[in-house]
Length: 375
Image (tube, rainbow, N blue to C red; front, side, top):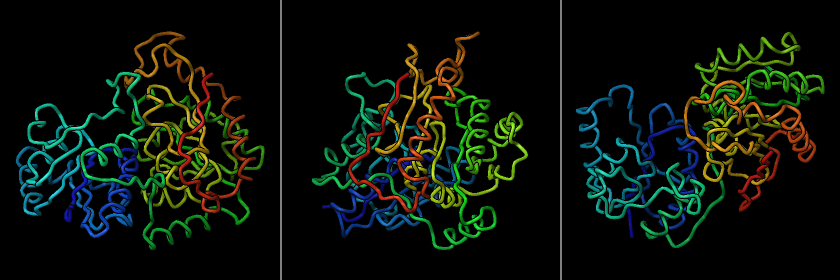
């Protein structure tokens, strides 16, 4: 039915990874179509080798495509492509505008109110914070529902979050790994940063976990972007084992694609709710994550082997970037997740999967609901 398809998601790392089951479903339903994915330029490497798309279109929204007139020029380029199906998977203003004025023969998906009139079918994103509790869905399910109800897809082909590394980056990841770790090393990945303060488990808690893992014989690899460097430095400063050769810091030093290549060699990923968490899911590494401000049913790690820990705070999920509560109640959702509990479930996963690197583990297709531990 459609031969030239554009999928739009121009937001964050996690948002992009959560689109990958929809890309596979589109390919299964339209095997002969040209499928293009429009995403943010810094994230292009995450999907450049996705086997379910033919083209990755990049928008430099913080560079040459920033601003009203630059956006108009970008939309003009999109219009020249004459897409017959345009699917918007994020309802922010930029993505909504690109979809609305794309010139697509059929335009569907999520939209800001001001652009809805230009869509052929607008779907509610049931993963958003303003969704009534009884209607909430995981973000992946929401995307697949758009394809079913608005894009003519009759078969859902969901094989979980997917990501392929370019051969040159896989080789680079292997080279870094061999230089940093011995062949017998069992490595646990730590991602302690997050875009919101309310998504961050306490750095002192991460420090205690790192100390305990090191004493058990594991090695620790700290990941994160350049903005996470001060957080990681503060965490390591609180470690009793901070001088250990088993502490490895990649924070701010490797690209997203190399992060993925290193994660697939780790045996466990201790992480906040963040973009790297979803990359870890795609890399099949067992995950223990701590959720604070984020709604669990909509953004949990999309893999049945993973474990999510949360506390029953009345304000959860607040969706607020900084906790407004004071005193002992400030960040209670994170403070009240004890180190002992996190270690218990981390060690359970290490035992269950024999601390094998993620690339050696089987992927269980269809088993995507993680285990939620509510304290």
